[in-house]
Each structure stands twice: as C-alpha cells, then as structure tokens.
Length: 224
Image (cartoon, rainbow, N blue to C red):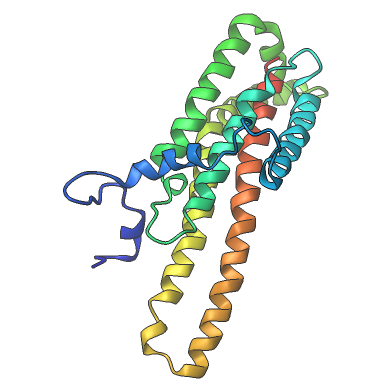
C-alpha cells in the first residue's frame, strides 16, 4: 500500500527485506543487442544505425581529433535510454528518476572536465569567463555569472533528467488511481488518455537521454 504518491519513486522499498529496486538499473545490459550472430537481427541493425548517427554528431561536437571520445557519451546515452524505457514497464523501479543516479552521472563527468580544462588549458578556461566584446565595467560581473553557471551545471543536468521522468510517471500514477471510481464511459477515456501519456513518455525517454548526452558532450568540447 502506498503511503503517498512519491512512494513509487522510493529506492529504499524492499522485497523480502532486500533492496532489490536498484537491480533494474542493470537489466539494460541484458537488452543491448550482441554482435555474436552471423545474421544480424532487425533490432541490431536499428541499434547500429542509431549508434553510427550519434557517433557522427558527437564527432562534430568534440572535433575530428577526439575520434574515440564519443564512446563514453554513446554509452551514457544507451544506459539512460534503456533505464528510461524500463521504468515504463509495470513493477520496475525507474532509477533514472532519482537524483542518486542522475547526479552520479553528471557530477563525476563535470569534475573530470573541469580538472582537465584548468590543468591542461588554463588560459582557454580563463578566456571563457569573459565573453568576447564584454565592456570593461561588466567584466567582474561576467566572471561571477560565468563561474556560477559552470558550478550549477551538474545540478541542472541531474535535476532536468530526474524531474522530467518523475513528472510523467506521477501523472500516470494520479490518473491510474482514479480508475476504480469512474463509470464505464469515463474509464474508456481514461484508458485512452493513459495510452497517449505512455506514448508521450516514450518520446520523453528518448529526448531526455539524448539531451543529457548532448549537453555533457558540449561541456566536454568547451574545455578542449
């Protein structure tokens, strides 16, 4: 029995006194298609097309010299995408809707980018604090604003993904809890609305994983 609406996002709820909710995060490794077949399946061909398209986009953002640098962002996109879709299935915990997972993705990557930029390209990082054409009187304020915007980047990445996943799931939960008190005609409309929302959530699952990976690659390209 749910104590409140947000209990569906509780990572501490357990089965047989074992915290098994986070195991759904690793189910994505069983869905990724393998390259061990002599004749590739349609799913494998589709996934290969997606990977090659993403690789071309990340290569444009990261530059021609970072050919293998897109692997980490493609892996990040894949993991978030599969976890978002797994959360749409019944009785599976949506780990990408929790800040513990999203912040653990965003914060280490941002810290590594900042360390690399300030240690290897210090002058380039200082130049980013003052945009070109800034008046002399506004330079101290621009340095402060750019510093704050850099510091809050991992938080905005984590909150954006978690908030978008929570919003749709919470709306589906709210509509689903009203089904037992509706008449037959209203129940049909409720089911139709639920199907539309589920379709929208599928699109959100793809878009949010893509946005997370693209923004992370943009932050990486700024320090290079």
